[in-house]
Image (tube, rainbow, N blue to C red):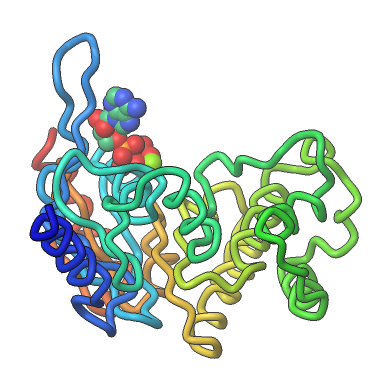
Length: 264
Ligand SMILES: Nc1ncnc2c1ncn2[C@@H]1O[C@H](COP(=O)(O)OP(=O)(O)OP(=O)(O)O)[C@@H](O)[C@H]1O
Ligand SMILES: [Mg+2]
């Protein structure tokens, strides 16, 4: 009994040790399968990935290649079928509920593909909700500068239904950055924006990376958006097909086109 307890304590201590202190996110051989009517869909089929602290990583790939599933697993939103995910050294899969939810709330910011704003709350209440749930006081100066920079300062008292898709997306981005999380995961954060709006969001993300050492992982379909990141992981069929460092948008577009062609 004592030996078993000691073994468990040792295992917990080993888990608590950061395997790689400079990595904000580490994925090792992550699989995620879904069972549907036709059998098992392998959304992630063995993904290993290291995102260094302070890095801005873009994730690209054809529709259905597993980008959102990767973000969900890497952020602790979802638990892989097998494999390990570490955020800031903590083994997220080893956390039981509600610890995993609390961990995510404290350490991770998420911008969803479908913004996920609460309809009954104003833009400002949506932005500050995660902080209030965590019992933390919002940093008014920081929030003020964020809403100013993304251009929603005059929309804060509106509810999501009274905002355009692009404005809702910007509210979601400010919400993700509000608590200065260890990592921000963003699923197509510029998808609903026009060119000027997209440039503003990408500029803000790049700024928080460069000036605050924020780690950002961003899914995008736009090679120009990906080119603002340090590196781009290209996914195909639930795997990482390659990681390109500072690629030119034209090279990324060509790489993606060759993947689409291979699938056709
Ligand atoms: N909840 C689910 N149940 C069953 N299959 C799922 C589920 N979520 C995702 N999948 C499947 O897993 C695969 C990967 O989906 P995912 O949403 O990660 O793709 P994606 O690369 O984000 O695509 P998109 O660019 O269209 O957003 C797809 O084949 C999808 O149909
Ligand atoms: Mg997706």
